[in-house]
Length: 434
Picture 1: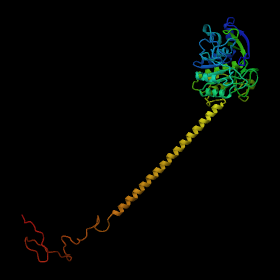
Picture 2: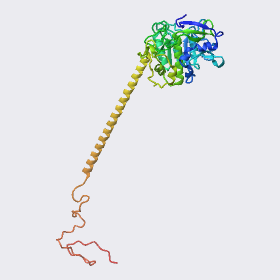
Picture 3: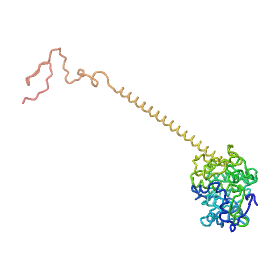
Picture 4: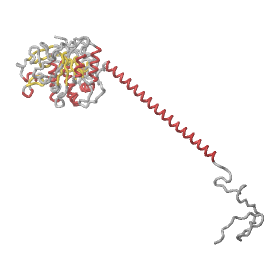
């Protein structure tokens, strides 16, 4: 069994021998997670969950009509399951199984039964790219959630995988990973910044002892005695399994439910709803979060759908990938540069406005001084000027009468034709009376 497989398949219940209620009633996580109530709020309709795994049995009756066309990154064949592999089928059934039979009362019911599954066959064996191509492919195909229920002890291609996770977050795609089943540290890709690392709990809500844990853990979910579709001996049958692979699948389904109801939230804000409503068990109640075993606590998807939770920041509780940090810093630098340029332009406009206003004032002052000086120079002064009294006739006046002593008048001549006395000029001729 590969490192990606569930830790244990505790038993197999072939479809032909398992009673309908035997499979459905054994799905204790549906009761714990209050599925019947939360399905009144959301069923994951319109959501695509990419399952990066070992392939999916598209013929299983509980998955019929839920599996989209995907891609095989291992050998270029079909993304459907291969002989001996049933892990991906089980993960898909936890997320989007819809049961079968009358009223869909038989078989496995997933937590988001109306979501679609995008099958991607990849186990990250290529050390040059790891899961990078699969993650980018899922984003480009319209997935809203990516489930990677696999663990590698070390990062396969740190730069490529980190950049692919940053690409997913940029497109508001939630990436969920299993912490691992060896009781050790959180494995990869769950340990990458930007991934929701999920540990496992048992039916009582206590930490599943074989679950890996660490500071990267964000959430926990059911991981013990989980009924799934598929099986190594009967691909169309059922099995009971343990492992954080199941815990990651339940968390991916919860993220799809939240996305269905709150389509405008970013990936980080969806995770924020899940972490804000998660609950620590009584044994560690009051402990600082994120707790290395439980993270922020066990998922409570009904509360995530119904409680009044502030949106929070763009990335919520997620650690930001280095590639995203660099992009953010570059964006901030560009924004700061643009703001500085904007302020410089504003100051330049103000400066030129002041210079223009001062220039206009100077021109107006110069014009006023010139006009005033010309008016002063052209204004005549003294008697006889405009508005003065007239003076005596000057030389050359046509009638230069000699001045007479005060009270004497020149003689008056009334007789027409009588010559004037000697020494006086003759008056101008008068017309004869009529």
